Image (cartoon, rainbow, N blue to C red; front, side):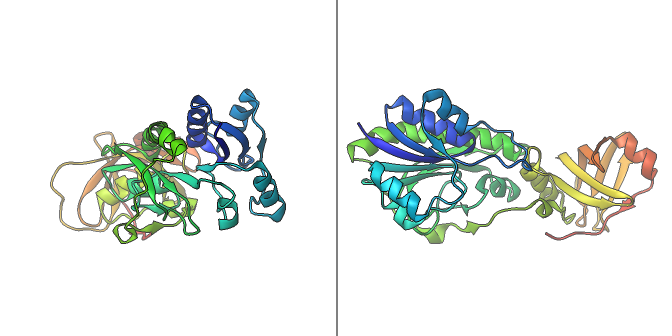
Length: 310
């Protein structure tokens, strides 16, 4: 029987671990994360899935210690799999697997290597992303590709919407290629790293809105909408968070200073290039905020906005 050690977290971790179990892989150990109490936990628990199936699951702060390395070597895994595990694994850990260590990445590599690839793809206005199963190397997300599956990104879909589709694609890619991996016949396609780029992690502060164009605002809002921290801007008296928008299809007006105003019962933002969008779901100082609330607080005159750069 093929033996694996699995590093996993989040929904991708749960779905891909379920695929391994479906294929009768001997999962000798799962390494996962302790949930952070300051983080919104909106996803499924790998630890709970392991408990359900009687699999040992541990949550080390560092998986690269000499003690952990000795433990992994004693298990003699055929494969290591990493499914949405958040910490880097050093080469010594990867080398404990007889037939290789593989990762499931949430983009169509070599594009969007690095952190939070789905959020970045939405923020950058991509129309497609996907899931990639690839061999792990010391350099993140740079190893040979085994398989990929693409998913579309709709013009109004949020990162959470796309994440659900990428999760399904990840499970499908693993399900398709796992038999060949076990048999030793899986493809290995070298990446052309020059055809993609590396992206870093994002912080809540990175949700600051740049009011330069309606498209830029709309994509940022979609890319960080709940369950992520959200896009925000400063207004007199507090912070406005914007959770859902719609780009207006009318021709842009002349370039002007960005401003917010309620018209015909809808809160509109006119951006620096004259393009406009509607703010459909908002929150002000932690409370839901409607167009009528905006009108009551700020009146019907435009509220000028400084163009804020990320």
